[in-house]
Amino acid sequence: MTRVAVAGATGWTGRAIAEAVHAAPDLELTGAVARRAAGQDLGLAWGGDPVGVTVSEDVAEALDGVDVLVDFTTHEAALRHALAAVAAGVHVVVGTSGLTAEDFAVIDQAARDAGVGAVAAGNFSLTAAMAQAAALLVAPHLPRREIVDYASAGKADAPSGTARELAERLGEVAPAQPPDVAVADVSGLREARGATVAGTQVHSVRLPGFVVSTEVVFALPDERLVIRHDAGPTPQPYVAGTLLAIRAAPGRTGLVRGLDTLLLGRDA
Image (cartoon, rainbow, N blue to C red; front, side, top):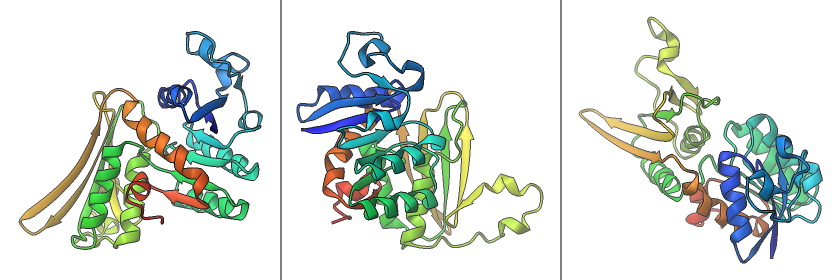
């Protein structure tokens, strides 16, 4: 039985993950972190019946006897949470957006030093993982590409974790061919060309009506290939992939980045 704590257990995605862990026959929900509900039974904090898990205010309080910490909080807290867990010998699953490649390098080194596993993904949806896997196959053959990241008007981080991870992973596979007109040479507003992430231009759209959608556009003269993932209005797409990561993390040492890496066995 794998014992799991969820940081962000009353949040939009974190609650769905915690409920799924609580219902899984091979997992045991033993800890939860949510500052506003600290001290309450998690089930009561959800507005339902008690589940026998007391909500902690700080992640350190929730790590006692835990095998895996799952983090769906904020980018300001996620790195600190991951490093605290690793230092305590606890495996980590990070689904929080906003962390950088440098942040993940720090987590990887800390996990290797501690001999524990970590799994991180900008998006734990199975279909998003397959979209990323497809883009990684295409990148060496079509080096001209840009990414468009769509999300709700209230999403604070830009680009999304999905788009950032995609750009950074594509950069590892094949360098992007620079634009014909360098961003520094743009006439007008350079910001209109987006942000350069690992060599790829990324454009973030934040409007009502979107949840999370990400597309990568590959191009050759007179033709284009668009790989796009769209998520609906519930957190359910992220549950199955997160549970897969929870079960996989204890068998790893160091960081595995990208759900597609797990699904396709690329970390073996």
